[in-house]
Image (cartoon, rainbow, N blue to C red; front, top):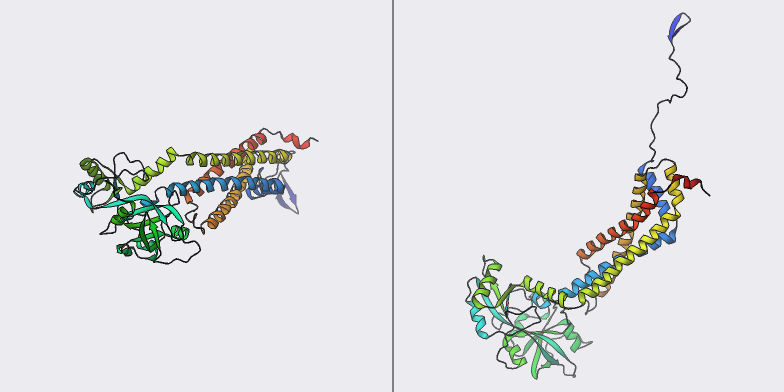
Amino acid sequence: MSTTVSGSPTSVSPEPSAGRRVAGPRRSRNGSAPAMNWVALRMLTGDRSKYLGLIFAIAFSTFLIAQQSSLFLVIMNRTRSVILDVPDANVWIMAPATRYIDEVFALKDSDLDRVRSVPGVSWAVPFFKGSASAVALDGNFRQVLLLGVDDASLAGAPEPRRMILGSVENLRDPDAVLVDQAGYHFFYPGQPLELGKTLEMNDHRAKIEGIVNASVNFNSQPIFYTRYSQAIAFVGSQRKLMSFVLAKSAPGVPLSEVTSRIAAQTGLQANTSDDFGTKTILYYIRNTAIAGAIGITVFIAILVGTVVAGQTFYMFTLENLKQFGALKAIGTTNGRIVRMIMMQAVLVGAVGFGVGIGMDTAFFVALSHKEPTRDFVLFWQTITLAGGLELLIVLVASLASIRKVLVLEPAIVFRG
């Protein structure tokens, strides 16, 4: 259609028909993600008591899981402390039926020569592990762990870096012994570390010529090191006294091949240091109640976290049904609401996990400064375990809430 104005033709566009929408920028029915996340956060923290209850449940569960798992690893590591403190040898030879480090069946002196004759063995030395009764001058006494190392090479003695006072070479002196720091403080409580003190060991004189930072053993006994011949003198004469043979594989020869050769040619059991340590740990797991007791505690922690967090989170959802209904009434999709609930669950889990690990850190730092618990540490493996379990807990806790919201009718917002 055209008209003439002042003699000039002008084109006029037709008017839009009734009911026709004018094109414009489209607006998302779900709203922007940051805005919806902000709404979810405000809903979560609106009731401070329930929010803090959720945080506490997750934090307490995290604390117990990481703490008990780390204590389990510490205790199991103590069972192989003697093996860990012998850095020189990488092969342990013992009686065929031996199952763990504390089960000793003495070997014959000729077994040492038989091991030395095996191809692939660089060197082999005797090693004594037993107990003795040590008595201080004031009458204070205790059963101690006595370790006898090779007289000539001192193989089996602590590393020099572990010496607090004195030197490993001091073991060559007559009646010389090295004692761990905890043992020294037991026999001489409240006294400063000092060399030259004497005590009686099985009616024999023993002179402290060194103080060692030894690993804590499973029974928390004082640890004494001395020469093999001196250890034999301390415990008395018997037909067989050699507890183990320590050996070192020759360069370039695989450890597995050396242990197989020793077992085949001598009839004795030969294990690498790592394998013998693992066998010792597995023995205590299978034959003691330690694993079961700690496992029950971890299970209770998981159960408490799941039940308490799940119930609290479900109650939080019920109290906010009208808000979720309003969101659905204005066009928010189920997918967006599910993401909001998951964001709430993950946020609560992350904060609770951080608080729980912080509590664990404070716990282990406080204990690490005391002598009986100086080896208590928080392992990264247990932190990872706790994190994975807490993620599972918050996901399980949010499932019931998600189901309740998905079947929610938007009309609930208009009801009284």
